[in-house]
Length: 150
Image (cartoon, rainbow, N blue to C red; front, top):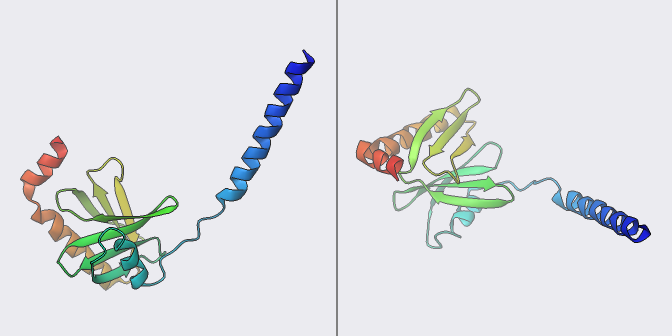
C-alpha cells in the first residue's frame, strides 16, 4: 500500500512540475507584422518569386496582399505561426465589413473558416472591400456551388 501511495504522489508531483513548465513556456504571443516587407517575406515562404504590395492590419496580426501577377493573398497569425493563403474566388464564401473597421472573410474551408483584418484607414478599407467583393463575384454562381458540393 505504501508503494502505491508513493507512486501516486510521484506522478502528481511530476504532473504539477510539467504543467508549470508548460505554463511558463506558453507565454504571450507578441509577434506582429511591422511593415509591408515583413508581410511579403512571410508570403515568400509560399512563393519565393512573389512581388507586390501589402496592406497591414491595424493590430499587425494580418495583411492583405496585392501581388504583381494580379492575384490576392492573405497572411495571418494562426496560433503561434504565420499562415499564408491565396485568395481564390472559388473558396471565398463571404466578405463582410464590421463597425470596428474590420473586414471579415469567410472561406469554404473548415480548417480556416474565416479571417478578420482590421484596416484603420476608411478609404483603404473601402478599396479592399470593393476588390474582395469583385473577386468573390467574379467566381460566378457555378464555382461557389461546386465548392459547396465538395
